[in-house]
Image 1 (tube, rainbow, N blue to C red):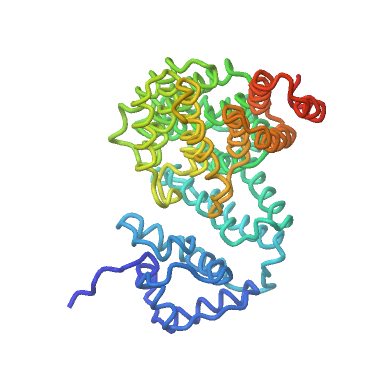
Image 2 (image 1 turned 90 degrees about the horizontal axis):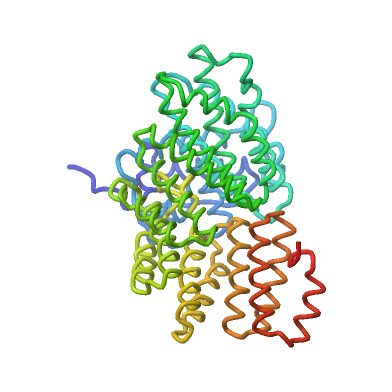
Length: 497
């Protein structure tokens, strides 16, 4: 008689492992011991996890489960994966299991992060440098590496400086992989093997750069990109079997360069990079790449205070909607709602904001576009808040400013995953603007102080421009306020320049 379908992803993985329940519990506890964690797992408890009857677990159990099976605990007790995802899940589960086995020479303790990351980095470098052959697409490599980085975060103590430093160093090492090969004048990439080798390293580098952008490593990313972008473009521009792969990667590279240009307040250069991203995306059959390039171009016009052109380009991206994963569709509608709000199209803005919320996946990290879509739950909060803020400025008597404040405040409730610094400080900047509309001097003082810290941390001229805009609004709203004068003296470096 056929077995009933698995109830959770965890039950699916246990079935694929072909271990008994008892053997699975023993393997779980072995992983815990190898990582100096003190936790046990009984067959009864595992059975309840597999049935989805337990919604949470102790943090130590969640850490070991993530390390052992290669997924966040919340995902493990969630719905099973589709057939294509199962094979990938099984592979990553087995990789996590192999990584947890003791070495012949030493064992890795969880507090010894430099050693742990060193060993993981060695595995990843071997994977990248063996990722060759016509049947080895770059998107599959990027997906594998992205999930490995997500596992870095799942097993780490985010407040441990040693973990943060080791993680950053590992990402920089991966980001720099193409640099030893990117020599435009040497002609070293003429042969097939060398080109495959270079493109695999570019795919790994771009994956690392997307993750570095979620922190405050904009200068590092800019330096890395400038070192190999021309060589990547050259491969993407000539007819060969590698053109499609190279064009997809070149499109990502230009989008990343566009993000750096934005934070340098170089909108003309950003527009150039976004148009190049679209040019290379159009050389591939990948609809997600084309949509991503259009979204980046449209947001350039948003930051350039041209909502009419922004809305037009976002609407072009909607032409691909039926071929896009949910995360990208959510982003298009979320950002389009902001442009509609700025244009005073109230009904369209509200409809798009609502649709973006409904489309946003429950587990965005499982979406195929998660790495390069650049759209976390915090990003959705930002865009929805901006939409209501735009409506508040167009329709001041309809209480949209309070709705915007409530939406922005959701960022503080997002504890399941870290909020990227670029997004966190952008939200804070707009919280300061919203406080002015609410005539709340206390809230403005709080947010503008945090915003100034963000300018110093990120070194972003775009974030500084937003701080200056919020300050100007405050000065116009409260021209005689003595507290504002004193605050201005304390924040002078951030609000001038």
